[in-house]
Image 1 (cartoon, rainbow, N blue to C red):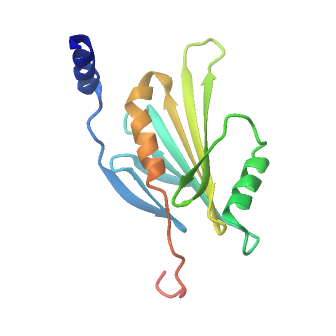
Image 2 (image 1 turned 180 degrees about the vertical axis):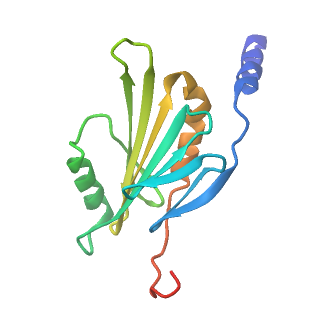
Length: 165
């Protein structure tokens, strides 16, 4: 019993402090990203960089071209377009179908490893992807944060009026 308590204390002591998150909107998608991550944009992709350089997040949001598409059909089309590779775990984010996959890449010399956690989703009107890249050595530091950011995904209501937007 004492060993279990000691293990819990050691694990709790090793946890990173809770990171402050800030709401960020990309087109018709809202999510919470770490407040201290630097935001930039290239070719319509939003990028958020951890200040230490150990991780970054890419966010892409697009509009579904076919009106009235069911959310699950939309997600299936997204996954098919991505090659239906194995490893996708279906879930719900933002009250709509989504999927998650984890990939590991190692440099040819084996010196560095990167974990990529990809989330994709669709509500029938909006498609999106979140791609987290992190140094495997820092995985414990970022794992809970990745889940927290993904779970913050929410679809925004498109405004009926274009004025003021």
